[in-house]
Image (cartoon, rainbow, N blue to C red; front, side):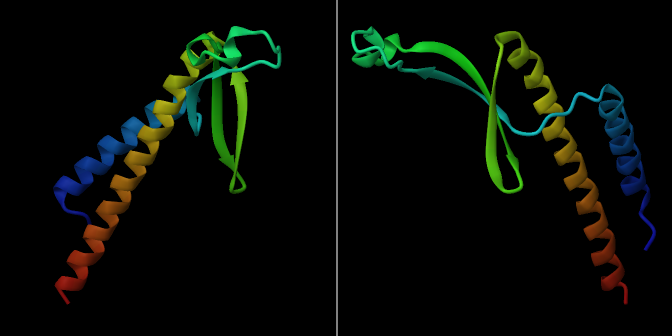
Length: 113
């Protein structure tokens, strides 16, 4: 079950990109969302007018042991972390492609039996 030439070339390209991302150590799972909130002040405009809610506040969420956990970030942190999250998503895409190559190889080997 040796990979064909195109599979080897693709696997090498994937390995290079994986290594490049890993060297940065800038990988973060989850997502970042913008939140606007209402306060507890009875006379505050945020209570009656959704366009006047407080914020924006940047909230990072992720799964830990099957539960969603979150943390508020400063605007600058959120901007930086978006790139880290993009790296995490790219890693997942690359790993999925490597898995697909493995499946292709197994299926090809089974077809030649």
